[in-house]
Length: 342
Ligand code: SAH
Image (cartoon, rainbow, N blue to C red; front, side, top):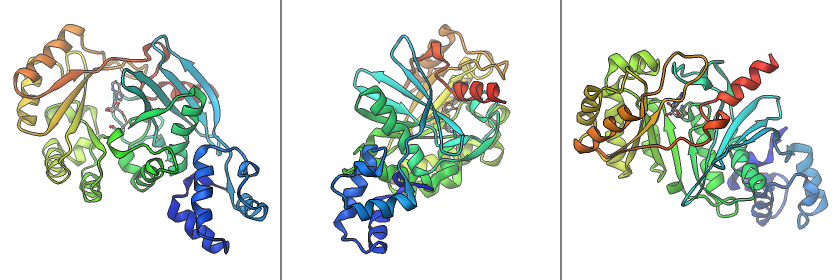
């Protein structure tokens, strides 16, 4: 049965027409669904016969909390079980300005980046809009906090599940739902160039993050198979077009891998690649995963890399690593759970 939380307000209005119900019921039910009620009987201002009609067609059952780990720095990591037995991970981080959540968009991933644990078992399936939303909703309820920022940086390639992701944005934005604005949401992509052009046409206010990780095709092609389809020049052309029409600054993610992409030459090459663009570089020391021999850069090389970018006119910062003691990154919890189950 379909998750009632998959339905946008328009879907809900169409459903009310089908059910021969007045239009105002749509907003009422949407609000209940998005508040996380666990049964139709809790919808106290909805008539009994309509509750029964909904219960025959939809479910409001929450995802099952399979694991919850809380790190010393307060970062929380959740493993959620979905209705079909698949599981996904979500991370909640606390910053000075509020709570930020990192959600998954697919169970597994098919991009094949060599440094990433999320892709090792391949793509299992796309998440529905409601399943993406549920991570925000039930994590917020469990932790008892108001979440202010969302990053689509968990497992999966958001632009490989674009329609559901766009519907999720609509759900989470709505004033009768969680009401989280586009400017508080970041979408990260490994670089599906055709979809970046599609996204540009939607004219959203979200922040686009590009997982760049290397300044040229020779290096990027070794760690990210997507680069063979869309090389760096085509990716950056799409990014320039995106900022020209949305006026939004793009974030470039760059995981520093020891001796591979962290040399001063790489930093200078990256600086000349991005110079003059509305861009920010987020540097992160690679998180080591069991399936790969790649190592993180040293803190000294990380600092030097960051300095070279800033000296050459490209703003860059080194991202703090949160939840380090709980495998809070890059699909490691889900991966371990799936391996133990097998
Ligand atoms: N598929 C999307 C979003 C999910 S990955 C994308 O590729 O952008 C979220 C971010 O974590 C990406 O920038 C990804 O490259 C990065 N990442 C994956 N594994 C990592 C690791 N082991 N260390 C550091 N960053 C990693």
